[in-house]
Length: 371
Image (cartoon, rainbow, N blue to C red):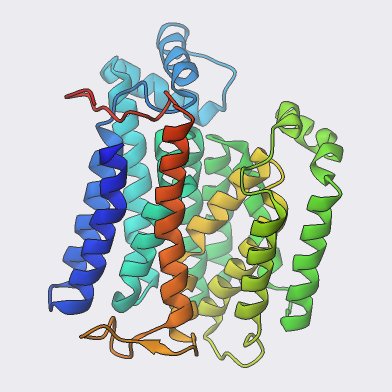
């Protein structure tokens, strides 16, 4: 458990370093990403709720060359098995895909003064880091391709070559779907971004998603999931976050961030990120009702990280300054509370796993030593 709790401690330390000292922001971001990469990449192969299934699949694919999982993931397993029959090597390769793509994504689309906030979200949203890189590694691969595809699309919007970017986005997203089919849902992103929205429409959409949750609509979506080979996902239990108190907090937060939607002026490419972020928060109200849809939300949460700079920059609440400013203008109280929420969320999740005696994650042990 110590290793897990060291993650928020390290992120808080980097946050304070970023705020108080003139150390290059590149160093802060790189140090944080490397720490997360090493912690995940050199973990014991037995960590992760699905590790037994993935190790079995790796060994079967190595012998037979085939398995029932998505073809892209099977091909990756075959390549790694041919080079080295070590499952640890597969974990290392998957994490290279994920962390390199996310690192480039942040540097390309987020201003330097907001890199630390992206690092906070990556590290301390348990499903983004802990679950995605420790457990659902097929989806970890899928995210890497989707995020690369969206990079191409956003670049094409910035430089007025939308058609080229659209083609690359679709090709890379389809490639990502060969690792986990949840990526197919992301093909609607270009269509969604062309719908003109306003504050009222966003709030209606959030309420609709909430009603879909309350009506337990996921139970009625078995045919759609069956088409994708995931009919059993309709029976998956809901997230531990699927409770009235949490949903009310998310809805309140959504109403707060949309309150200034009609007044914010952004470049087209930044507005795309902001709209995707708003959609992800609204979708969260429904996604917590079922594990499959929560996994789709995870992809959205990762690809919408660049929007955090818009949230922090346009936070009009009282500016919080501790000795030296968190950035050139200080950070709003609401943004500070949002970051604190991620810290408490991660710590609470780890303590929850410890209380449940979750052998899949607790204690942490690496390939070098056991905890």
